[in-house]
Image 1: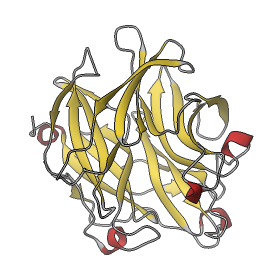
Image 2: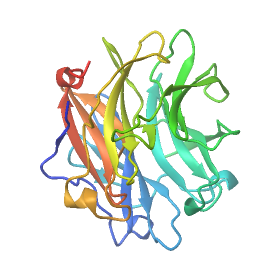
Image 3: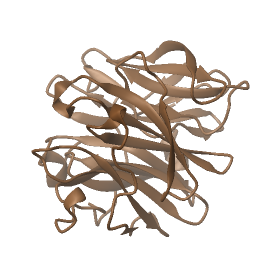
Length: 295
């Protein structure tokens, strides 16, 4: 299975006049509410400061977006004082839950990465719920859109693997264990991480994920997990579904990167939103039927 890029990519670029997003916009969460496609995207203003905030964009067709001139979510608490990065959004019972990487240290330090949770009804005002995985350096957390066996489920990434955890209240998580590892000799041999929240299909939970090789090239892949036991990996495509090829994916703040945080299902298609070279945002699509061809 391969994703097909939108012909008019990238769909979002930095806006220089907006100081908070003049450097880069990338790594966006996505959710479709039945009428509109909502994006919550990471934005960088000045590179010498390099503190991320989150912007908002909305679309009817999933390709052409209108966006706010001001950020909707900015670092406020001490645990996120150096940035709010790489959001994912899950809709549960009418509420949008946002997991994001909260930085308590400079981004380039490699320390102080924690998974934080917020919630919103309208993507304009947010309630913070704090750090939800306090005892581990962590990121790439995605909450499943429904409970499994009466429990909330989350995939997250403690280097270099994808882990699973469970919760009764979305704030306290337990039962952590590894569910997927990098593969030696392949495109995802160095580290992997979940992309958007898993998508429920008749054959299992479909997960788009990113993988990194020894040359630090970021590509996208796909895997399938058991519907009733999402800790059980059913299938995993050997080759990537998207890799850096376009100029704006090969060159930017971080070269040779495609990085996915959002995907939606609309009109029988999956729309996969991704950051290109940590600078712009693109979208690629695949039919629901073709998406499961790798099984």
